[in-house]
Length: 110
Length: 110
Image (cartoon, rainbow over all chains, first blue to last red; front, side, top):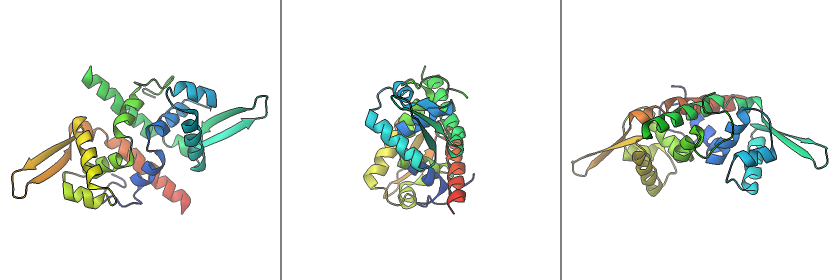
């Protein structure tokens, strides 16, 4: 499999991806945005349990990596929307593989 | 996409998978074991920078979730080998998708 042979060098492709997206909330933010653009308040409602600070931090980190784009509309109060960039959309197959695995866990434990 | 519609309920399939495999080291241990059974010392050498305690903790956690199996051979000193179970092998497509994404990052930044 691509990039999976040999030792895991610090710069191997899997490590490079894990550096960015590891962490449960990061994964779940990307999952939520795969179904389309969301407002900050929608993300916070969907991601039950995330603190406002953690959500803002994760969104900024994903924006810095070019995975999420942020659009601010000059309304009163300002409206901020988040969506996946092309690079972010490329994480779709990974999240989908996680969903398939999660479904199989459910099937085995019920 | 499977399990990706609607809000991210705490028990959605992606969250269920993220609960288990989120964390960089966990991902990299699974990556290493995808190429076959490894001894503890081989994993520690490959995963440069992981502490012995962290490696042992992560391996035990993965064993509890039925993702990794541990075999102890009664040699002197005892030899311990780790491999992926069928459930662990099912994470292959996810790790492969991470490798593909990591490769694309490399291509864009060099």
